[in-house]
Image (cartoon, rainbow, N blue to C red):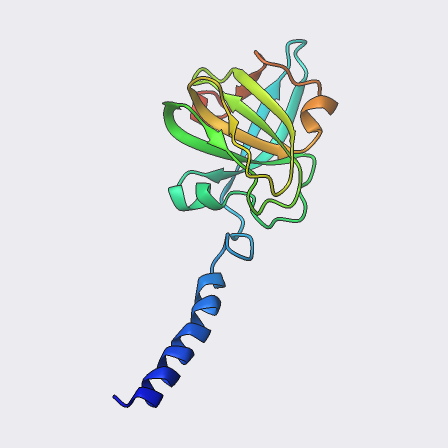
Amino acid sequence: MMPAMHRRLLLLVASLLPAAATAQPGVDRPQPRLREEPLVIVTRDGTRHSFRVEMAVRPEDQMIGMMFRREMADDEGMLFDWGSPRESAMWMRNTLIPLDMVFIAADGRIHRIHERAVPLSLATIESNGPVRATLELKGGIAERLNLRVGDRVLHRSFGTAP
């Protein structure tokens, strides 16, 4: 191949790479909505709070999560079901809205709550112990609903139906 032709081909390929790299959810846009299921949080005084949660079960869905979403309703969430208890570490890369992260033990009890995670932060938010799932809610909902460690989460992942 002639040197000038080779350079043009390299320039063409290089110009296409950024478009290819951004043509996928999580890089510059949200993923399509995931399958939804009902979830209920029962506080220590017996109050029931109902949510519709998107199920992030596949690793590729979990990697993208709430990235690039611009809004979340008060009764919506995303449940990251890890399949079995493990340490959970989350971050807010490419996440545009503040979130509350609720870490849930295998028995369905809330293990830890991290309120109002900062949008776009790369800081790691850890469960501080093994959990079966992590629930992301709209930032400020945990405080507004007075959710606390020890409250029960009803969902099929924990062997309970809402």
